[in-house]
Amino acid sequence: MGDAVRRVHWFTGCTSALVLVLGFVGSARAQLEMPDPSMIHGKALPARDLATGTITVRVVREAIGNDIPGRQVTLTVGGVGRTAMTDGMGRAEFSGLPVGGEGRAQATIDGEQLTSDPLAVPESGGLRVILVAGLAKAAERRKQEEADAAAAPPVKGVVVLGGNSRIVFEYPDDLMRVYYLLEIVNNARTRVDIGGPLVIDLPREAAGAFALDGSTTQANIAGTRVTVTGPFNSGITSLRIGFQIPFSTSSMTLTQPWPAALEQVTVASQKVGSLAISSPQFSTVGDVKAEDGTSFILASGNALPAGGVLSVQIAGLPVHSTTPRNVALALAVAIGVMGVWLSWPRGSSATEVHARLVSRRDSLLGELAQVEERLRRGSGESPKDLARKQRLVAELEQIYGELDEAAPRGGGTGVAA
Image (cartoon, rainbow, N blue to C red; front, side, top):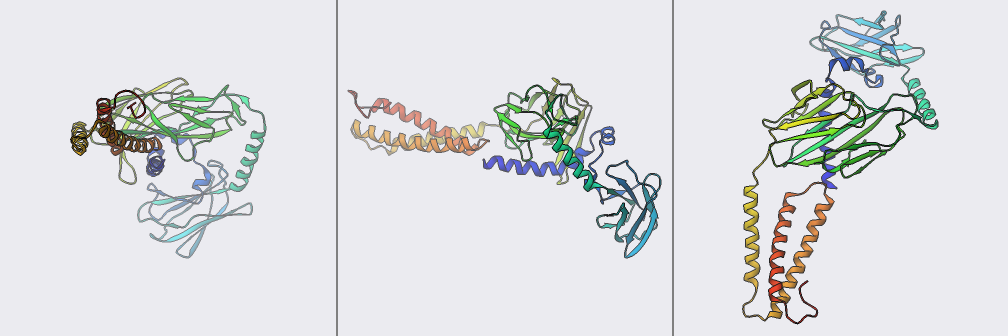
């Protein structure tokens, strides 16, 4: 469980670092998918196309594009206030502002006071600010619509895997860790019944699948099968899962069939050494850096229909030779067996030898049970525990062989099983 928690923490950090990178995949799609107005309300965004010392303030109602013209906007910078009226696009422009000056933008719409976050005039280029009116009313209305939709019986329909769905790879310790961040989208205004659960069969090599924070509680993971029960609410149902794939060769092909249409293929892979990814479904592949400096390969492609298969070829995997480890294990086993042999007193009776073997066997079985329990609790396999397990098994095989030779004859209790 501890390993799984650490993986979730790692993935949270990785995803945060990739937010901006993944946000730029497919410029055409980015233009069509409007951002959540509540996320950009009052934020000052750098605009290099504006002249230095220029700030534009756009005022909209509830959504981007629903512009409010002919309204007064006040911009206060360095304690000095200036006013301007919004044009037909809902924009008020302020120019000739002092570089480095700090302030805020404000407007009043239908009695609602709109105020931006603190801003500072950049040394180069300008700023764009958006003030969104009616957010509280829109949120209340959506809440009521969602309640009405939840109360209504579901209708027959379909869901898709939205364009913001993405796959992320990383490669620690001869393992491939794979993370699916999927958005199950119901575009209807009511709940839909797709005729059964949404079933995603992970690649056959997948192991230790688990749910990430923020994943829907409608999902159940059993082995390599992920089952998401319906009905599905209007909007987005987030499915966030992770799993791992051990590898021992420098290349592999990962195939993933999708039970619902995938609106956009987006894959981000940690770049390690000469690692490269390719796919018939990729239309673009490029290198990017996350905010923490980690290098990634970012690939995207067009939509896949329901039943379509995403096939990703991965080459240049960081495989490490197992020869040194195997030699070390063999030496450790040999030393352990020799130690057991040397610890037996010479000239002991068969009964005494048998008793010592049984005692040693029970001790090793107890230790092996503890190792097995640690491996069972962890979703990954600790190299240290795996090595110890192999040594214990080898020594137990030796002891069982000795027990067969040293067992008292004639039956009865104490005979080695």
